[in-house]
Length: 107
Image (cartoon, rainbow, N blue to C red):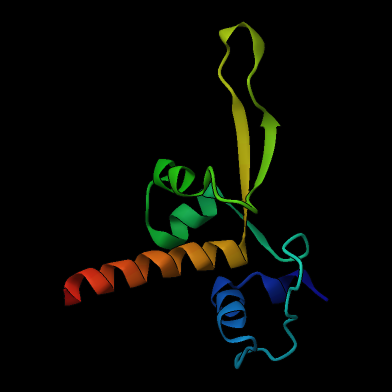
């Protein structure tokens, strides 16, 4: 499978939400988050038009998010942790917030 087939976030999120893709039926269903596309904080910030610090706060403690780097460094130095967010988790967190806002408006 070519990387370009997985590079369109709309196709990926559609595939994960619906279980199939109308735009590209050859896209696989990802049963394991290790094999699905992962997004950096910067990419999700651009897609969602939010600040990187907001994306980092949303996903820093979400189970299933890949954390790469040194945590709890010695000597009082700052921790450097890179987050990689699986497409399914990004979609799930996005839907939680969309539903929550819609429900608030109806109340």
